[in-house]
Image (cartoon, rainbow, N blue to C red; front, top):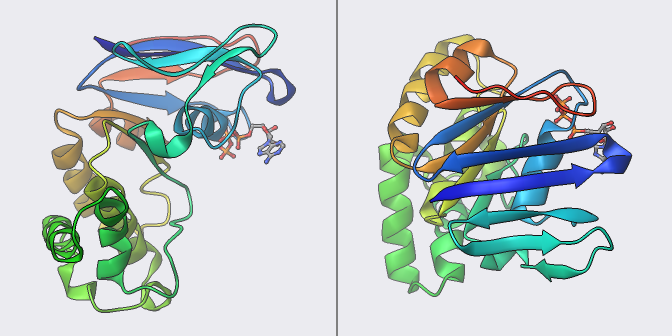
Length: 218
Ligand SMILES: Nc1ncnc2c1ncn2[C@@H]1O[C@H](COP(=O)(O)OP(=O)(O)OP(=O)(O)O)[C@@H](O)[C@H]1O
């Protein structure tokens, strides 16, 4: 069973395909502006591509022919969570309620959602921020909270866009270790500029080059 996709967004010069066995992590690398974030946005359902397909095992995320006809599943029904480059936390909610948002919107009771949020924050060593508002956090702290929020939604596929970019050099090694731990047996796609991060986190690498793309696996 795989996460298989072909993502084509011609006006952004993007045309890539990959088959990733479920439970593994794909690293996407390539120069600025080549379309790495675009691939994640399409998989998450935030950007509707003109054509192409993506499946998680037998489950279709989208499957569109060259005329754009076919199936397109909306973001909240995909079981796919994107942690974007800038952690987009809700400013009016506490850290705990930000993380509880995913389970809550999936139908968990307020108490159960908060418990799950507390557990994830503890696992990411961020439980001491639980009562704070996002605007009082540093970039690295906010990134841990954003990661806890993404994981608390229990996605089948986790997409991470430059997860270590806002973290300073001291915090990087710690967060990288946590990521290695939480990515474990998870199906994930990680975009990163940093070869160390890719080496540490990814089982396979998709290298995006000028259209048409080049590919490699390690
Ligand atoms: N919202 C948008 N509307 C139109 N074009 C966009 C939009 N976002 C990105 N692009 C264009 O799509 C192309 C791919 O951008 P994308 O952000 O996916 O690249 P990237 O590889 O993730 O870049 P970086 O490494 O700088 O984050 C670029 O040419 C960019 O200018």
